[in-house]
Length: 296
Image (cartoon, rainbow, N blue to C red; front, side):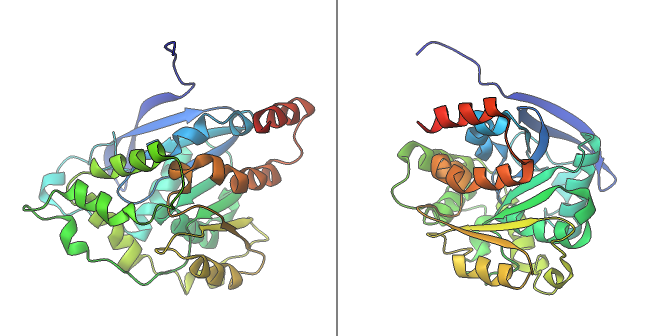
């Protein structure tokens, strides 16, 4: 194979989040409608690598993925050693809004998965006018916790390997083996206590069962998706949330688990691209020809 660069640009964005200075790592590819991608708990923006390489998407969307503070290439803020990391609903929403403003995004589409799939519900309830569309993969207002977070930050346990072991069963069988192991590798690299801190939002602070009553899909369209093999956010959890929100679209994705964009992007694209096309509107003839060539 000859050497080549992927058409992805990575840079550091300096901004204040929650009144504290941060240096945030951001990657992007493509041009057009902004598509802001939110990674799962304990991982980072690398989960969207294949989406950023899909010309069917990047020909019409400016795809942006950032590593949240404490994740990936985004370091914690100064003084992190004296605090326990906990992701709260307010901090998560504020982060998304401040990053969108800093990047001067005009009503972006937000695609989030897992914790990112849940926070889009809060965005839909409180800030629908700021977004063109909201897509929650593995998104539901609440799931009963099925795991013990006490193992996720102990001096006698390798946290990364425990995190990877914990989530390994959430990946659907039959997908590309290399993508399965790359998804697990991302989890093995998480910082001490970071996965546990993200799950504080997922398990404690982020119960949105009452919040979804305020969602008006007439102000911002909303899609919820769930992989059929996911037992963390089960299809029935997603569907119960969608049924409680008038006008919410719901999709059960075949042959996928909890990490659709990284465990088997080709299968995920079968569900995602029609949603993006609905948001973007009819495609130009040249784009349709390119998409048909990609599928052939």
